[in-house]
Structure formats: C-alpha cells, structure tokens
Image (cartoon, rainbow, N blue to C red):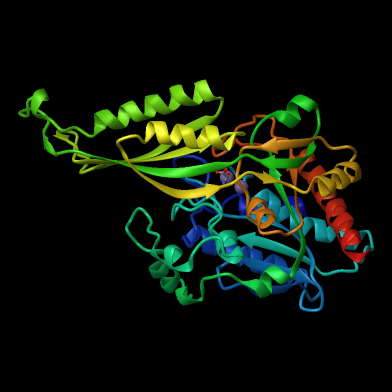
Length: 392
Ligand code: HGY
Ligand code: MN
Ligand code: MN
C-alpha cells in the first residue's frame, strides 16, 4: 500500500468531535495506530520489534548484525491536533522503503522504521517520553509515576495495556541498532513556503522547556465573600500569563500557557487552586531561563521537561541538503525525537515537508499531497545517503 493508501487508512483514527485528532499515548486510538504499524510492517516482511519503553521498530534486515539507518517519527498527537505532525514521518518511512525496493536498491545496511511513544507528552506531561527513556535522559521511576489528567500513572496505564512498567529504562541494545536516524516531519512554520521549497533539512532545535506553575488560594463563595477578604489564585495566574507574554516580546523568545486546571472549578466559587503549564522556547537559552525566573518569582514552579539546544550534525545536514536538490537548511522551535537521539550522540537528521499554512498542533496543519510525495522521495534519498555513509 503506497503513501496515499496508508495515509487514507489513518485519516479516521482518533478523530476528535471538536476537530482534528486526539491520539494520546496508550489510548484506544493509539492502540489502533499500533495495530496499523504492525500490519504495515508485516505487509512488507519487516521484522517488528517493540522495545521496553513502548517504541516500535520495523526492520528490513537484521540490526543485530550491524547498525542500520532508521527513519521514523511518532503517531501520537496533541489534543485536537493536526493530521501530519508525526504520522507524516511514519507513513513516509514505510513508503520510502517501498520506493527503495521499487528502485532495486539494497542499502547494504539494515533499514528500520521507528515509531516513538508519547512524543507530544500530551497525556503524561513529558514530551519525547519514549526516546528520553530509550536514551536514559528520563529516569524510569519518574516516568512510572507521571500521571494523566485522570490521575492514572503511566505504570497503571501500561499494566492495563498488558505491559510491564518495570521494564522501562535506558535500552543500549536498541540504541546500538541505530547507525543513523532521520525523521521526516511536517514543517511547523512557513519558512519553506517563503523559500518556495517543498523540502527542507533541519539545522537545529531551539532550547525549550515546559514548567508547571501552581497558584494556591482559598476557595470561597463567589457572591458572599468580600473582595478584600479573598485569596483568589486566579489573579496571580492571570498576571503570570500577561507577564510571560510581555517578557517574551521583550526578550525575543516565545512563551505559551496552553493548559490550565482550575479547582474546584465551580462557576460560583472563588477557586482554591490554579495549575498552569508554561512552555518557553527561544534561540537563547539564557533568555528562556530568565523569563521563567521572572514569571515564576514568588510562584510554585516545577520544571516538567527541558530540552537543550540541538545542533544537528552540520556535515550530515549539508550532505542531505545537497542530496535533496540543495534543500534549505532551517532551524525549528519544535521538539522532536530526532533531537533527543541527536543529543544522545546518534548521527541524526531531519527532513521537513512544506506546510503552506505554517500552522501546527491544530486541525489547520497541512501539507499538499504533491509535497508529501516529494517528501517520500527525499526520505528515500536521505536513507540511501545515510546508508552509504555507514558503509564507508
Ligand atoms: O511541542 C513540540 O515542539 C513538538 O511538536 N512535540
Ligand atoms: Mn512531532
Ligand atoms: Mn507536535
């Protein structure tokens, strides 16, 4: 089944009545997507391996004999997210293997398709959960204790999915299979559109992090409590949101509060507690950290995830740019499993596909079919280029 067939098979999975897709890790939608991945691997005679952290790998050739080239991404999404962020990379990886086979190319090293679990961190709060566990940058005990909005821990959810949470942890054997990794991803911005290029190559990922802010007050009656007597946590919360935006504009970084939890959440009660999540990113790590320190002054702040700047190997980026018709080499402010693998020392690259809307984490995220097909060709060329690099 070529790109279009695979793509259409996914379009009905995890659709959200509010729009877009909600495909959270270990949800029903995720289990459907995992089954899709298994079928596509089987259809191609690939050796399907699930690792201890819930990531999926489908191999053409045996990576136990020698490390190979892996292409992949993720299938989970943010809530009411777009169709392309993640799945475009996984579908394109299977289609790239098809294209290499149609060309009669035998890469000379094993070629794998990877699907990382909980890349968005939309359920358990830590993005790139699967690749962080794989590479050992996330402690398994912390991971097991992460909770979703229902208060279920990752350990409990894994058990319900028939998996052993005790198995979580750094996986040197699986890591050893990766001679090189390349992630194709829809661009989450409009740089390629502005450059008139369907394909791009990643130069870097900005440093970025996610912090939880807790504002505590005293629940009270919305009508009978005097304003002077109130300890309303909504006020310092509101000030923090406005302060984050002002500081971000001043520092040339971006700051977002996209998730807030108010408790108890009655329309006729002053809340007792407000929890909010602050996402801050910027080219300059110092500016990012200074913003968090400023906005978090006097507030309970907990860092839930931090990703230092990722500079992809410039030699690999240049080689791929040349192999892909002098594709532009551009930075991104979006985090990716490729960034985690690069930080762990794996030779890694990213290939971007033009997004004419520039919008992502939204149903408006888009890539033209012709650009998606160009992405498959680019990914196949990138895999072959990286495989040749492993053979020298
Ligand atoms: O949030 C991000 O940067 C990515 O889309 N997970
Ligand atoms: Mn993504
Ligand atoms: Mn994303």
